[in-house]
Amino acid sequence: MTAESLDSWDPEVTPSRLAGKVAFLRGQLVPHAEAEEAVLYPAVEEAMGSPAAMATMVADHVEIVRRIELLAEMTAETGTGPPGPQACNALRRQLFGLYAILRLHFDKAEGILLPELDARLSPQEAEALFGRMGAAAHRP
Image 1 (cartoon, rainbow, N blue to C red):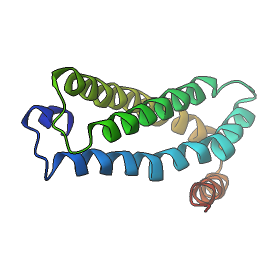
Image 2: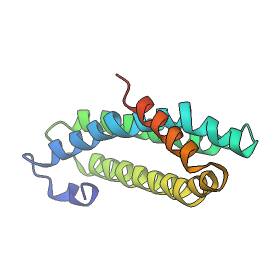
Image 3: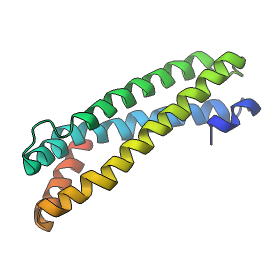
Image 4: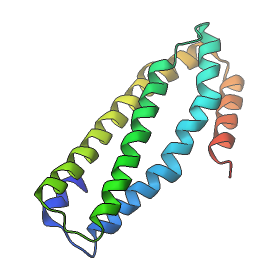
């Protein structure tokens, strides 16, 4: 894991790992979150009859994006490094914090959200919903 390897900074590997994580998060995770907010969450709120049911999930997205952007800034500031002890600790905190928020968000989706959808949508409705979400996540 990148966070655990920061103390043994390798200028040939570590900066590209960090940049790769930022690129993945910005290029894959953020569009997925945007698609959830545009397609999935409104459908869940409608199915549940609760217009604010997904507010905590949207709040997770706000914090996730904020942390991704902070990680991007820190990565850019570090360059090829190695970072000093304070910068190294800040990077590590950012990576572990982001991991924790993502883990909790995914657990809520898998443990609460998806079972709720399974109980309320037909297989055809669910397939159509996830198709629309996939299309929304891959818009240029």
